Amino acid sequence: MIYAITNTKGGVGKTTTATNLAVEFADRKKHTLLVDLDPQAHATRCFLKNKTERDVGDLIMDKPSQAIRSVTQTEITNLDIVPASARLTETAELLSGRIRREERLGRALESLRENYQVIIIDCPPALGILTYNAVNAADLLIVPVQPGVGAVTGLKAILETAQELRDQDDVPYRILITMYDMRTSRTNTIFEELLEEHKRRLLKTIISKSESLNQANLARKPVSRFQPSSRGANEYSALCNELLRIRK
Ligand SMILES: Nc1ncnc2c1ncn2[C@@H]1O[C@H](COP(=O)(O)OP(=O)(O)OP(=O)(O)O)[C@@H](O)[C@H]1O
Ligand SMILES: [Mg+2]
Image (tube, rainbow, N blue to C red):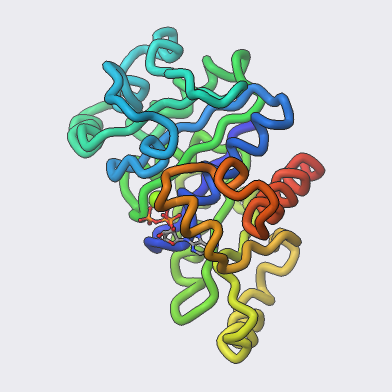
């Protein structure tokens, strides 16, 4: 199963979701691969201290048969990563001259499906060639949405793009509410009205705004290792269970 965690809006919890979810799947003995597709490389820094020779740029540009060479082990059992680096920006430029440039990541990951039960792609906060590749590669898009002004704009952009790219009206997606703050109930009411349209696609698990998640990120650690019984750890565990129950 390939999940792309994506939203054109920045800072909505994509990387927090991708990294913590990857660890949850790995902890359930699923052989898991995290693909960092963001030149900011935040997900990579959560798992690797040193630079690797190969990264996601190589995964995209190499022949699919070479895909496994871009994979690096993490210290977490059952979790491997294809790291990102700032070089990824150049890869995106290089891609523009290639035939079927929106399909390269998908083809590389197809060849890795036999090695991994779960593949999670952490996307950059932009609609560009990298996100197009992730959208094409995914079996399910997970769109984290943070309540507040403009919350649904990024969601709309991603869904429209996905429909066009995949030439498919019913693109499989789920919405994940992140950084939910009970205290700002007024904004939340407006938000819930906006989400009415997508009700069937709303994940039941909600990720609250929590200091444990923020601190774990600052320490560059998965929350389940940083504060195992915190609210953030419990919510990402529940999210993993929910995803295991649904097919698409
Ligand atoms: N549930 C949460 N509670 C509190 N803080 C959070 C939560 N989720 C994420 N954060 C914090 O919000 C910031 C943005 O989170 P994150 O990096 O996951 O978002 P992103 O969508 O990947 O951002 P970008 O678009 O830059 O890639 C980080 O500082 C992170 O620590
Ligand atoms: Mg990110």
